[in-house]
Image 1 (cartoon, rainbow, N blue to C red):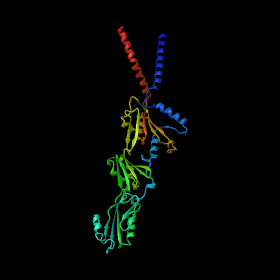
Image 2 (cartoon, rainbow, N blue to C red):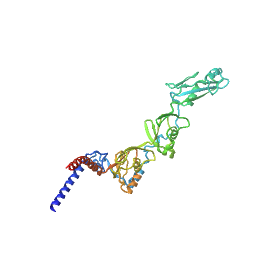
Image 3 (cartoon, one colour):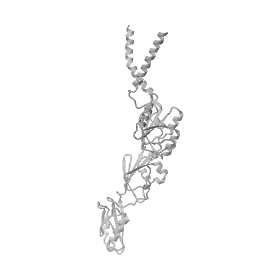
Image 4 (cartoon, rainbow, N blue to C red):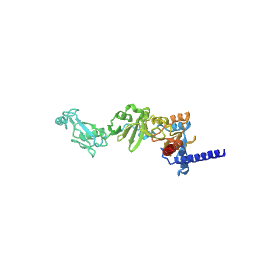
Length: 398
């Protein structure tokens, strides 16, 4: 019995040493990312050694946390429309490059325009022509901002409304004409425009006295059937703000007037997250303003990998998260955080279905420790199998 016991003890000792060696070897094998244990241990090291005292915090997702995150965020679009942009209709003025047409009328008996019939007919404009009427051809506002009107000279037009241009011309002609009346209109508007970018196209939309609003750009570009996945990016005077099409249609106050020089980009599915780790597919997933939960994101990449995934470690890496996650303090800050969800039970699955992802989040599914050990076993098996075959063949020959 002693001999048998010693023999079994030596076998168990050898087996223990072999397992220890295999476990040690698992650390240097290639992997798609850190395991559940590695992330937990490294997060504590980062917090202790961080210079700012904050570092990367790993937070377990709970029902209370999901509610607080939903309450603290007003949706995916965080910027919104500044109060200073909620202006009235823009004051449209003539600008350089605009084309302007001027018509002059003189009350009878005409003094200045009594013989202007030939000139008016040559202009061939729809307003009409005859004695006492002169329709000037279209002319572009010069780089110096002026137009030329016969008998009135150079008229400063840039930076003025059409009514102001009419008044200047009328005052200059009043000394040589009988009660002159002037009509000026912009025939080609190139200075009071808004640039609309969508689907690889650039559209220049002119502004009118009606007053165009943000919603007016949607019919010009994009797919109207995808309103829930559509957002609008507005750039004004070097400042950019975002707003979703849903928020724009639900809240009329957000449907502000466009101003000249605005750049409006219509974005379809404007948000993107990255899914990495032990899933059946690693991919960048696009989504719209209706949002995307952790469960939906995992579903889009064909679920967790049964042979590699550790269901305890579903992580959401967020660059700009929240510093204080206690019950009393829940302030927004510019520090990164990692949210962890355990989906081994129904409660965790419900949390994954409720936790909303944000733009540029990274969803990572950790690798199970046994997956690395399995790699080592497979490696040793593939190494020892040829040697075993040779020994078996040699024994067969004997």
